[in-house]
Length: 296
Image (cartoon, rainbow, N blue to C red; front, side):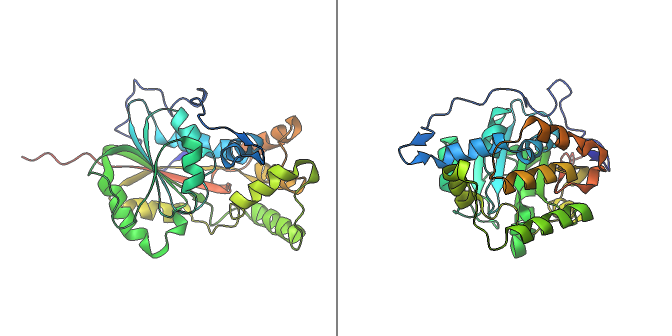
């Protein structure tokens, strides 16, 4: 669950449904999901989301921190890591979305999935109007490096007064149990290219798209909050997901060929509620933009 650390969001609309519509159906998919050569990149991303316990948790965390989406103009900004099917499901949850990436590496796959344009933008000058967006999602800002400060300033500029920004990244200070789990998994897979023969076409394509998904440097809550402070925003809520039991299920699934998580695996993942909130492998911070000062 999210853990309040400061004031609650004063700009939320109490009449709007909290967190969007997580259970609503995605919009119709306009692209073919399979070709004579096998599943398309778009199909791989959607199927990967459904097979995982980690990805739906990340979506739920973001929606919980974003607040109401009805009628909101929203920006999704990727910072160089694959976003998978996350944008597709964010769009299904409500709001009017604009898609942007800091690099062109994943824009083709993302554009095919959404059937909408994806802009490649500069962190020092986002091509959007002042106060254009009510909600902003920033995925993996740990990859921005030396451009973090100018990017923060730009994000603060394009966010509307009383708007909310959610930054999401891998936890730079995960629980010791999760670190040991990942290190053990990496040691087991070193020198092995096995992907699971039962699902070989799916897995080879998945690895090509997402080979870096679990080896990104992370950020702590304090670092995410510092980014919000730099943007002129007020961090008010922390959240985390994918704790030890979910990560154990994901690592087991990957060793067994990245197949879907079965009923037993989902039961095991549900034990995450026994783990303290801040100890997840994924962390997020929500921040709000203050209302403009009224001139006397």
